[in-house]
Amino acid sequence: MSLNLNKNTKPTLKNINLIITAGTTTAIIGLSGAGKTSLLKLLSGIYQANEGFVYLDKSDLTKRNFNDLGKYIGYLSQTTDLLAGKVSENIARFGEVNSELVIEAAQAAGGHEMIISLPAGYETVLGDNGFG
Image (cartoon, rainbow, N blue to C red; front, side, top):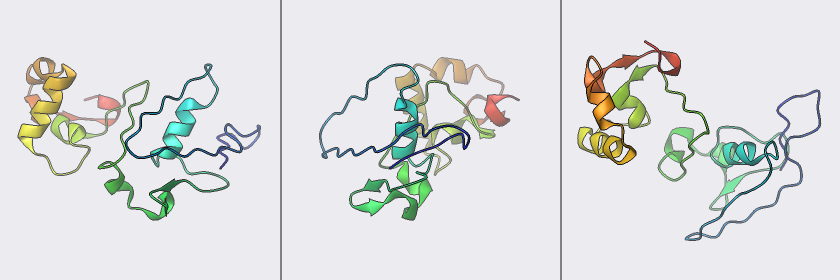
């Protein structure tokens, strides 16, 4: 697979072949700017390859329902961007909001106390990038 984020430059990633066996742990390490984040965004469906394919269980990632991928693949960026919507919706990845699981996730991440201090707690409405 290859990925070119800027059409005027050489590909960010080129000739990548990676097989990760189920139940294993894989570390992706390298210098700053080596393409680790781009690779992870490809693997999680955020980016699409310009050439080649990304498969999950022998299924082309572009043929899968992007909203369902969150059940199987998680990606946490180096920077956090919240989307427009309620805090609880952001935590639930805009799927079904199960309040008990949302609070459990926030507590595990150490954010529960901060969230309940917001004007409407978990129901606080955010704008793009968490503003609002």
